[in-house]
Image 1 (cartoon, rainbow, N blue to C red):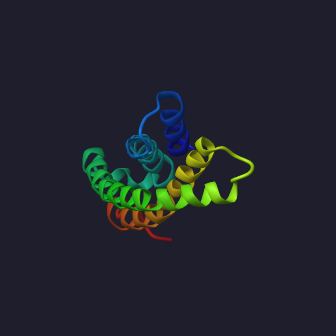
Image 2 (cartoon, rainbow, N blue to C red):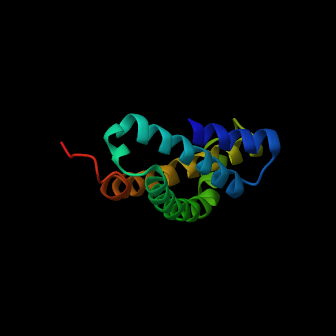
Image 3 (tube, rainbow, N blue to C red):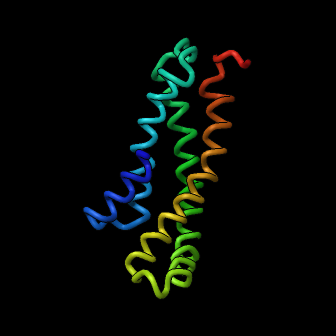
Length: 131
């Protein structure tokens, strides 16, 4: 919610370019995710110093952002074309572009979700007992 809400707000309200908007929305989600993971998903992980854990989380996330940006940039034209083709009689080019950008972002988020979760679980939150 944080990621897509921020992305669409930056695009619609501020006219920000999509690649920059997705990087900023990723950063907003990153902060939210770290706080929720540390205090709710993995409350036992607080045995690690917050600075060390935040640094690990940030490093994993920067790699994730790099992967996500490449996937987003590569898929954007494909998804925009697909949106224009499928909605040619029902939506205008502006809506097709926004829909295509959101579809590209969905795929990029799903790809990076697996990277971020796996590496964070194995490294950043390694102090949590596995059940």
